[in-house]
Structure formats: structure tokens, C-alpha cells
Image (cartoon, rainbow, N blue to C red):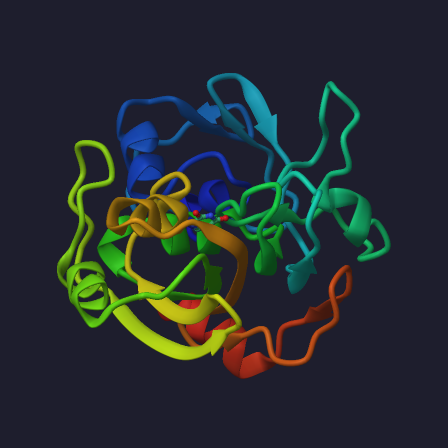
Length: 234
Ligand code: URA
């Protein structure tokens, strides 16, 4: 395996940053500094970055979790609140959340021990569309839909073009599907707030070609080969 990929998979840095680390002489293989781009590691090699040994990630796991409300997207919490790691403890290896869902948001969370894939998915240049179903207060007028589609100011940042579709009225409220390209903190909640609707419920239903489907809250499933291929193609 190429040295930059080995470092990226371990979650240390993106492949590009790993190349910089190599170039700058921060990486040793079997005790010897390697500055050669494209260096290939073989099984049993001991890789160090800044003097710290980086264990190889041998078995890659990719899962999706349907995150319930009231769980932090984290591996642990000093205040002992429930964390998503509690729900995937029997996967067999430590898998980390890719990106974040708010405490009260439910739905699709990708978790993996493949730091390389996690880095690439999180990188804004890939523009993977994340789709949410939001129950928002009141009626969402066509003018508001148009604003959300075009971009709204969420506190010094204008959101990129979004996909927005009203699904139905639910009594006084509205169920909306919204697809965004970015992942700013509390973005969907802030976007609706910017046009005057409050998000009452929020669920993520897809990330690119990966769909939540009928997975129950609190449950996870392993990704299928095509889904892993999609992640690796980014
Ligand atoms: N946007 C939000 O406001 N919250 C989330 O959890 C995800 C996207």
C-alpha cells in the first residue's frame, strides 16, 4: 500500500497532507526517514509519523447507523451523555462517525475506521449532496422555497443552491425535503430559521448514493459493495 494511503487510512491526515508530511521528513518506515513520494509499504513495516507509531488499519468496516434523538455524534462524552459509539459497540472494530448530526437530529450517519474515506467525504470539493426530511413550523410559501433554493444568509455565510421540495402539510406544519451540498454547523435549522420557519423534527435520509431506507432508529447495517465503491470513488 502507498505510504500516503496508509497514513490517511489511519485517520492521521488526508492523502495530500500525508504527502506533505512525507516530503517534510516527518515520516519514518522501519526507523528510516522516507521522503520518496509513492513509497510502497509492505506488511510488517513500522510506520512512524512525528515519532509516533501508526498502526495499520487491516479490516475496513463501513456501516450506516440510524441515529436516534438524544445521542451525541461522538465516541465519548465527559458529561456521560449517550454517544453514537454506544450503538455500534458490537461491530468488532472501532468505527468513527463521518461528519456530525445534532443531538436532536435523527437518521443516516456513516461510520467507518477508514480515515481516508472519511476525509474525502468530508471535503467540501466533493459536494456530496446530503438530503434531509424536515418538519417545519407553519406553511412554507413558494417565495420561501425559492429563497432556500437560491441561498440564504445563515449568519455571514450564504448557502449554495439547494434542492427543496414540499412533501405535504401536516396539520399546521410542513414536511419538506431539502438537499444541501455543504455541512455547516446546524445548517438546515439555520436555513429554515432564515426564512422564518422553525425546524421541529430533522432526519437525514441520504448522503450521495447511500440511503437510510427502512433502517430502524438505533440500528445499523454494513454498507453494500456498491455503496463502499461510491465512497471510494469520491
Ligand atoms: N443540519 C442541521 O441543522 N442539523 C443537522 O444535524 C444536520 C444538518
